[in-house]
Length: 126
Image (cartoon, rainbow, N blue to C red):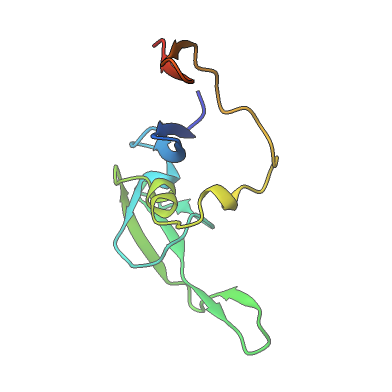
């Protein structure tokens, strides 16, 4: 199973994605609870004591992003909520954020057709 997936939920004619994280809270970079307010999953390292940290990055006037001099580290601890799930749950255009295929089958649901006398409705056979 992948560390992250979207669960597609059908509710009254609307399909919506719900992100889920299955990554190990004890080791996954997405599950680091940062002491800072930085939103990063880049440049993560582990200190000599095993604690995760990321270097503070500075923007230069020419637009370059470089490590701060001298090195400054922001530390975190394992076991927090998944930052990817939090990000996706707050993405108002999550469905449009797909950078891959524009068409794919979400799933298949066996149904029982129900004739009402004038038209058909359906009931999922789950």
